[in-house]
Amino acid sequence: MNSLKITSKDLISIVSELKEKIKFNHISNVTIINSYDIFFSFSIYRKEKLFISLNPQHPFVCLIAIDNPCGTKIGMLNDYLRKEVKDGFLLDVETLNSDRIVKISYSRTNEYFDKEERFIIIELIPHRPNFIVLNNDGTILFATHQTDIANERPILKGLKYVLPENSNFELKEEEFSLESFKESVSNYYIEAKRKRLQEQFKPVLTHIKSRIKTLKTKIKVLNKEIEEAKSHFVYQEIGTMILTYAYDEDELNNYVKENNINYDPSLNPGLNANKYFQKYKKAKRTVEMDEKELVKTSDEIDYYESCLAQSKYMNEDDILELAALLFPHKFKIGNRKKIEAKPDEVVIENTKIYYGKNAKQNDFLTFKKSNKTDLFLHIKDEHGSHVVIASSNPSNEVILTACEIALLLSGKEEGEIQATQIKNIKKGSFIGQAILTSYESYIIKSVRSRTKKLLNK
Image 1: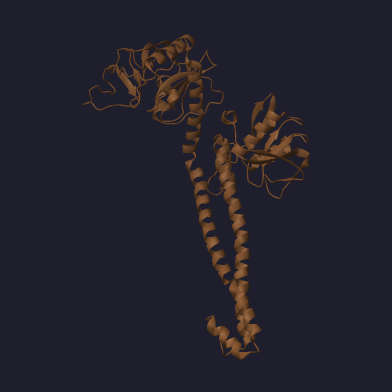
Image 2: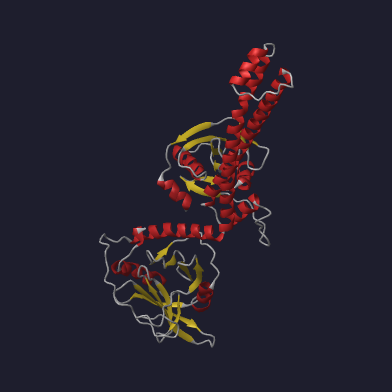
């Protein structure tokens, strides 16, 4: 993400906007996204939030619009900032040392109800970023990254804060665009939220991946069994040849000897042939059963892989609901309120496109929420999300976008999409199954980047 790297000159533009918009605001809320990323909300200026990233590769600060903020991550950083920074009144924002360092001055009311001034120092130096809180005399009260006392510039609670030497390391030469930078930060926030969810629900996603791995191993075993069983189909020919030579003992003995056939001379040819026919029938049954199991297993793999693809666009409740549907005995919602199926939506040309992210949401969307004349879309012959356009006559652009969403939610970027009105769909035998009585097909060769961005948002 080179677009997130900033110089001290770029930072002046960013801080100038901060000073203009958030000065003399209270910090109304603090949200910890993960171990790197934080954002502050404000009492008066609510259009945007202050995003602070301590990502070692590209630390930054920036105001961005966040429509669907995530919950805060519980931990020491969250506890400290909520106790010591939240509700602080912002007095000033400035850069320090002509470097990538931001100083935020704020006042707070202490436990004795006295006003005291404090400072937040955000060092945006790649590979060694830091978030430091100072007392009014410059004493360090808190730091996300403390250093050893033997360090040339120790960062420890109780010590006086000392500015680092100016790095004077400015490689970026292209003109800085605050608007473009904000867009990059917004995209980074989407990824940060996604990674956080994946970390938070790693046991669920790991369990799905483990199930896929087990099923793929099962497919290898089934294929090996089928191959071995098919090699026994030759027993049918052996049995037939034994019966053919049943009345010519010399020919029969020659056939048995030349082909090294296991033949029991104490039994008549008919019984010997029947033994081979029985082996053939057993092999045939094995192939038939294993081929059915192979189809079932492959279908199950497709289903779990579609769940993984959909999980990229899920929120916390969606993943909890998915876990409860897939593994009810292993992952329980517990004391949480009952989660209701709630399909997501995007809007194109003032037309809403809805999509489900699990079987329960798909079922609700298609058979309860939608109108009979709404357009239904689904990837052909594979597991995937139900996508519904809330219109009986959508434009080609809306249909194309809906097709691309159906592909993305199946983990694909090309394929065939079936489309029909809701009235042409019958409910299947299990939840989320839709049977189309008629449909049109759309072949998508590739998904546009604009649709990916739309779905991510």
